[in-house]
Length: 205
Image 1 (cartoon, one colour):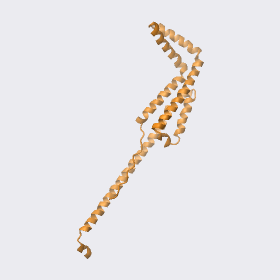
Image 2 (image 1 turned 30 degrees about the vertical axis):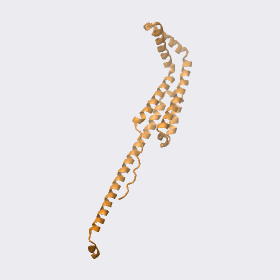
Image 3 (image 1 turned 135 degrees about the vertical axis):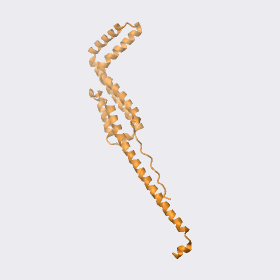
Image 4 (image 1 turned 180 degrees about the vertical axis):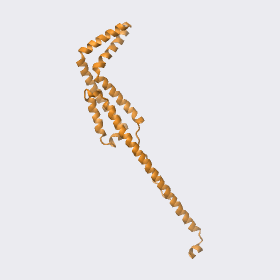
């Protein structure tokens, strides 16, 4: 009987379900960076909300007077402090962008190193996402999420192609082994029939 070859294990296949936790992380960091980039707008609004909550907790609810007062104070502070608030937001956006890029990169290397090892150019694309994140003004674009989606899209597409090729090769190999087994059985059957013929008949032939 022919010996069957050991079938290689199927190639790993990345899916969007497996990629979703990383994409959620990238989305969180991009959202935080967007808030920091637009801190000139969100800063006074957050200050007004905090002021309203703090004053209401200490002196009790005063209805719309508390909200109006805090809103007016936050508006004045935002108007006169806009340059400083905007600069603070840019610095925070750069810090958040760098930390997010390093965090996602570490996650990808530890859990899915193939995304860089098996695909040329992915490391450059990921580096480009850092440039997008660290550039003022355009840093509001969700570059980290967009580039990570692009990397996963390429990997998932390639993995599906490799898995389809693997299944095709396994089917062809299985068919070949079945044919070999059938041929071996025919040979064994023929040998068995020859052995069943009496020796006198074979000598006479």
